[in-house]
Length: 126
Length: 255
Image (cartoon, rainbow over all chains, first blue to last red; front, top):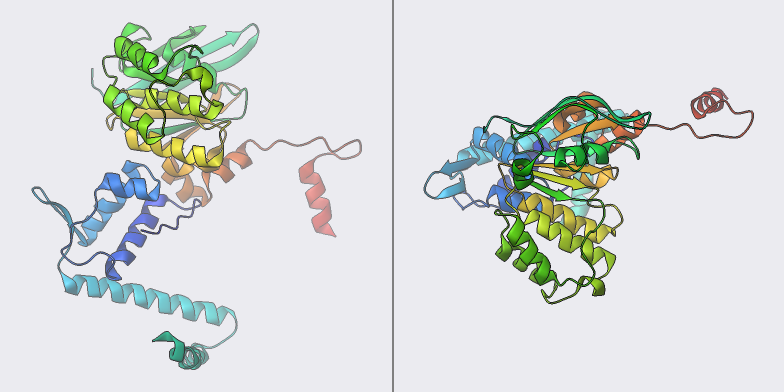
């Protein structure tokens, strides 16, 4: 997995966020076995306590399930995954609008511009 | 004996002549943590590590590791990486493995052999034939192949290239005994801050800060490297007529 960590913020919330994104983006499929704390910590270059904390939070979020016999897996609750996906999307849109407003556009103008840009880009997109 | 405190120092002081290398240090460190011992050159990092190790005696004050004063028991639970290599030139890697096997019950020879093999180091290689970087790697492999309670690593990444630094750091965080604590002294903070749970800032032999990394980041919104630089900022001598760096900054921003 690709990790993108910023040292000016606590590491575990960033790990949590990036794993969350990987799950909603389908990089880890619902019901799939999930890597161990040890392996993921090694992959991200962080210590195990930090990765453990991130995973515990994701268990709290319901995205990861720990089973005593079969280890850790991704939840198969697709509704929950979809809900979190939509929350992340909502946050992205809010960020976009905030950013455009700080440039002096109204929300409406921002949306219109976004439409125009996607129309142009749409040809190459899919 | 297995309390939560692994290392405890009470009023620990070490004077060399009139100079106090450690000055009334009070410290408690728990188990299962990766702790950075950070401070500029001459702040007392190596002195503290040597006292914990039982290599030098404090002038006064007390120190306990896993409930005991430094002695044969603490040496059996501490795995120490000194700031220089100490192997005799004529030795082969195999000889050093034998030595560690004799000295330390918790030495996992198989692990050490596997780690050497992964680096392409032959157990029959002589220390003499190795580069400085390879010697340092061999030494680290030995230290991390013990199932110790306390790993004392004195400047493990100083003087090696960035690729070797990554190797050393991942070797440390992937191989320490999970119930044990790792104490890493360094001034190369940006390279290691991502693996730390806690930091201790030393200045002139005194602990001026001992906090969790998350706590510091939440409070200050800065990397530990930046916090360190702010804490230990030195004012350079600018030549006659300049008062100091900060003043100079003020003047130019006025314009």
